Length: 559
Image (cartoon, rainbow, N blue to C red; front, top):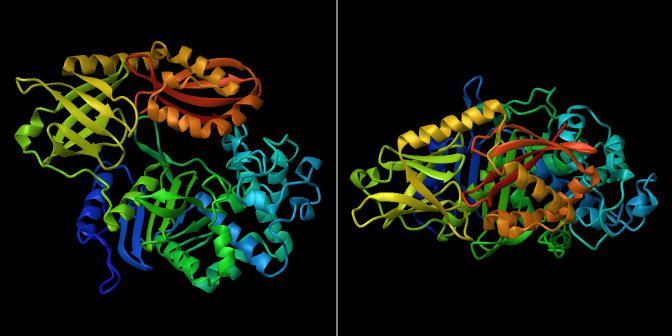
């Protein structure tokens, strides 16, 4: 549900793409109609909004819609505010980012003797992250913690690597930085940010989140359950994310923050340059440094119980794109990037070649994606819509010659059309790399049989043949740090490669696998298993293709 037409400021700098507004509306509509995004978005040029939009519901129980003024938890976007506080204290002569953490934290173990504040800022300290502790979010995260208690969760664990030698995204490092801010400034972390950042900038819609306080306009956080419906996000005591992820804000306040980062109002130019430097792993101080749409991009995202956020800056064009969601979803990054690309005139989506209703009708029906997954295509209005299990629906847009694309994810479909004009199947790409998945068109009876079989298997506690064996194999490979990428979907293999060190670091301390128990089938048809190790448990989801190739794999720490 769109909360109203996009709000635009007249007579202000404009996007280089004159068709930006209708193209942006179409992109947002694709998310909204598929129930794939609930939150707020903002796009600005040179500090002036060209689009402000609320989407979906801020409170589903009371029927309150989202608006640009709605307050959302922003998760790890908090880290750039922590980094700013550290740099402000350095400018004041109260610390140096090259000081060892042991100078400020007297209980630092000997292994931390060479860890500097710079290492913590750039995720190169080697300190294990407390959020990877098995069962953490089901037990510890629900309880209030002091800062010292948070530090002690990983203080006595071995370092993952020699400080400065590798990159490993680490929430514990930013907990330590928050500790330093408090010790050096003599103020509570939240008070320091309010006095030195939020109040000077007039960011009245930002602060340290506290579920006990009345915060007007604060959104409720949600997640999807196994049948695709909504449920309230699990409780998280906000003392736990602290300086790594405790803040809330609005899209308008983040634009104010963005402007301050251009004007050196809070930090000197040399400090800003230090913050925005890539230290070898596409990361600065609280910001990812990379490229998108042929331009440098300085950005970060955030994910926390019931909320997701993305804040993207394109300095060359002075374009800023912000997407906040009151749900757990990866769509914020793509939506923000796509809106920025549209504003800058990038070729974000393929050119559309509309097809009439009669032509669309031949594509409708059921398609078998895997032994346990069916895609249903139907016409809604004058558009083709795909449903996969209980996942959000996707609008498909025609390119011509039987080719379609989605705007809400990288999916592309090319239908296989015979000389008689009949559709026998489709080639489905879920990313830019690798071989497409062949989906055979099946009749309604077979689709119903597959759905019934899946439901019966779930009720009987029987997984898809081969998934448990594949999961056992993958677990062993991940613990050894040597996955067989040839047995994975290429896009999945890319993700596993990029996160291997983190996953291995999480799995190795858990020890050997003791048991694997089938729990059920997820919204997209993936089998859900609870894997119990010697020292913890993790929930895994895995989906196999027709050839036995692993098409999907994810994990979630569990109690």
